[in-house]
Length: 295
Length: 268
Figure 1 (cartoon, rainbow over the protein chains, first blue to last red):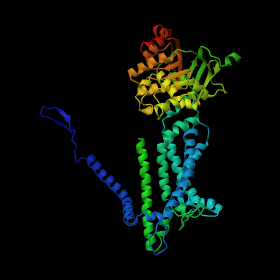
Figure 2: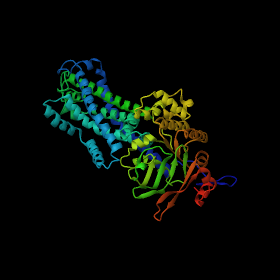
Figure 3: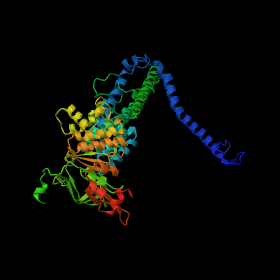
Figure 4: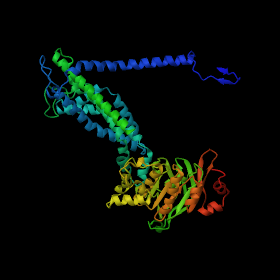
């Protein structure tokens, strides 16, 4: 709208007009967006609140030292399941991290400058793998490892989880390697470094923080997985003596004990759920911290 | 091919190109390059943008090999050896022929490790501390960094980074240093420092420099090649050398009208 002042100069008013359709629409959309954001956060807050209320009260060190209780007694502990979770996820990491990073190195550094047509289908396969339901990973590991070795075991659980972690690690590591500036590669090659020297000594170290973030997120996801574990590691009431026997995990403990009618076992399931959530949260925060430190 | 051409003996002519055409796929980027580059001299490539001077430079250490569609016709001899013969190892080529890039590109490692990286690759067994110091001294940056060798190379100023990159190139003891617009990202004072440094370095090294800056070419180089670019009927641009002369000749009394116009600042 044009206005003129006392001297007759014509100018443009820069003031906001609160009743113009544009301002009204903008305000309305801000309200809608805020509402949606709040709605999206409600389930997260509710879950956290409920788990804290039900689980936190049982938290003490004995939980990590004792074995799961028989029905109708003391609350006992999930020491074996806590160790079992670390064990299965540890085995899964040992498998998936080297395979994942090497696949990423192939995709990001080597596939493009050869005439290798496998790049596209490896890329494609990784995407498919990312979309495979976790229970299918479980049945796969059951049909191979469990049937072959004749026993449910931490190793079988680890293998099932490793397949689950693989796509996340490949994706994030590939992106991390691709984000390393080409000028580093040129500088290294210009100094007479071979391709593999350049990748291992310059590109990979520069990408390590971002790769670590991806690994953390993959581990955080594997820690909470239940479906693949039920087919492979199964569960156990006892401490593990080897990795070749049925192994308890926190997620399987929650699954088993949440369904029983005995209050002490239910309470232990709540405590285990709480510890599981804290573990996942911790890994996510660690991943963020590593990302931020890099920037 | 005569056998004496193939033998890797030291000659005063470091590079000789014969009818060199450079292609990216079907696209001819540069045509008919015929030049000799002499030992312990600074040779400058000047010319307007897109004339292929950097492309030619990168042929000398086979850095263009990183681009998949790249290939050449014609020959580049390095002390009489065909650089693009099938039995030549590009990794060995790059150890003899170092490179400094347009954007300073130190590795995200310590200053010390930036210098030590190349020699370690070559399996250097001597006194690394001494080699790092000599390289940094030769690149005129020792005084700036001697107390912070453990600091990140990427934390230095732009001019210091570029001198660090020169030190890094020197550390592998190349014969030739190729410089691809080494000062275009630097302020005038850093630029002068690098130019002074080049005069020092030419005692020991042969330098080929691509520059946009004509004053730099006229101040710093012994010989200058002027590149120009022609556009064909399909709109494809192909670079070629208009004139290659001792630097005073090219700037004072060029043969070609295009050179005359370019060096006097009338186009480009």
